[in-house]
Length: 251
Ligand SMILES: NC(=O)c1ccc[n+]([C@@H]2O[C@H](COP(=O)([O-])OP(=O)(O)OC[C@H]3O[C@@H](n4cnc5c(N)ncnc54)[C@H](OP(=O)(O)O)[C@@H]3O)[C@@H](O)[C@H]2O)c1
Image (cartoon, rainbow, N blue to C red; front, side):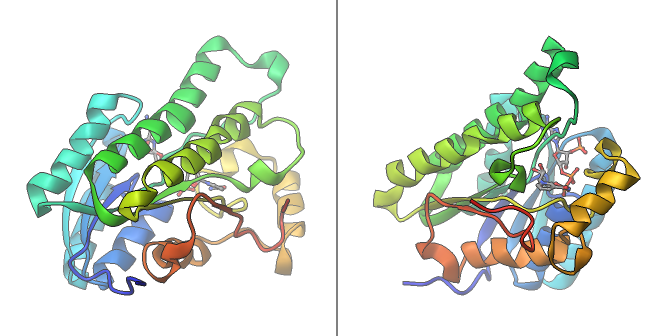
């Protein structure tokens, strides 16, 4: 029952313009998939256009769609773009997230609300809409963080904001199981992208590196294949959180 082929499959990629999402879009294009490249800010529009061009050049099809996924109407519009453009949805991957490293005593109400809107609310309604729109035997994959398996300071609203994803995922895995839809969280270690560095000091970056094999950060090239695996041969995983991180944290 394993689905090894992504050719002509329709993939909705939340945050598909750049970094991990951008690489994933290109690799899906190489496999002949049809990709909805969602992007958020106006600043990400050129990345989304370039990524979509690269998907087409690699042999896939692509459309871009902008949206603030903290708004449920925008989440629905991203899935509408898939159905309007390609007729159905087979795989939904949500790479969106927002990071903040700040002591609890200094965190404002606005920061809390924003962090939970992006990391929890958007993730929840992405899973809900995927559950409504996916074909039978579809796949839903959300991006967590290896901080879900850490005991550390500073990341209360980031790790805390991502934590509910595990329970959303478990519930969805049970609720969508009769349609053969698998639902999982991929929770990488600190990744070498512009998302990570602004929250950290150079000394702390070195500490993070020291906690993984080979004294290095997680590379997006090591995460994208795991997501592709879950979308294909790895279909028997469901309701799980995976920690690809070179040994940085575990539980
Ligand atoms: N880098 C790391 O250290 C690390 C480690 C573990 C897990 N992760 C997770 O991996 C995922 C990908 O991260 P990345 O490193 O590849 O960085 P990234 O490209 O900056 O990913 C975050 C994405 O979320 C989008 N986003 C932010 N607010 C949004 C909103 N309101 N609505 C819709 N989209 C929104 C961003 O778009 P704009 O930039 O246009 O706002 C961006 O495309 C994230 O979920 C992150 O939490 C990252």
